[in-house]
Length: 304
Image (cartoon, rainbow, N blue to C red; front, side):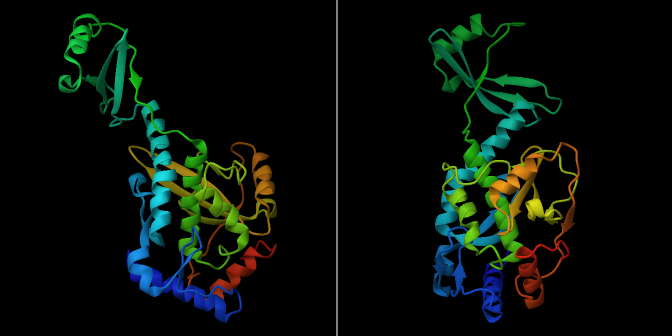
């Protein structure tokens, strides 16, 4: 990723919007998550490359956010999404999904690693150096016997549905920002989405804006062809040991979040929805493309 090029394209986007009278934003750079302004002199120190999705789940540097947002999202929401995916894969016993485990008998607890092979064969590895010798001897002589049934417990992973959901929404939002800039995402309508990302514990947005269900289209950004949930559908992939496809709806300012969610809930499983690929145009620097995108976001015509 060329950080300077990304920064300059964002500046151009802001300039085009101002020149066309489409925005009053006046700043060198605005973090898309917290919407704070930064001068050009602050870019090197305060603006960072943002991996989308997070690097631990196969993401690449795609856009820029401020150092504070990058750091807080990493510790507050991204780690929860990572461990949610890790938990899904552990439950499926995917090859390579080794996990720390423990076994307890009475007051004694033995720690080890459960390794999952290519054929999903399991190998329990006990590191005797990191266990109480008396506990290890007791388990070796009385519990870990041939054909014995052993109660093995995984070490708990961080679980928080709201925080994982916030990370999923953040990825979709930044995918959209990387393509469309401030053209419509600077609207105060998206303050609720940004607040949900930055304050994941609060119930700011309704559930069901995203799904892990099977998605039959390629990764990308799509325009919905139904005004009941008019907006953008962002499809992207998370990669750990397996592949996990995510589909997220980000409505336009013409549709309330709750209304869009209610409409999505009425769609039966396996019923296709009509979408249109976002045209491969420069929505950051091309004034004509920017104006057309703005018109689509604030109108009702389904033609782009």
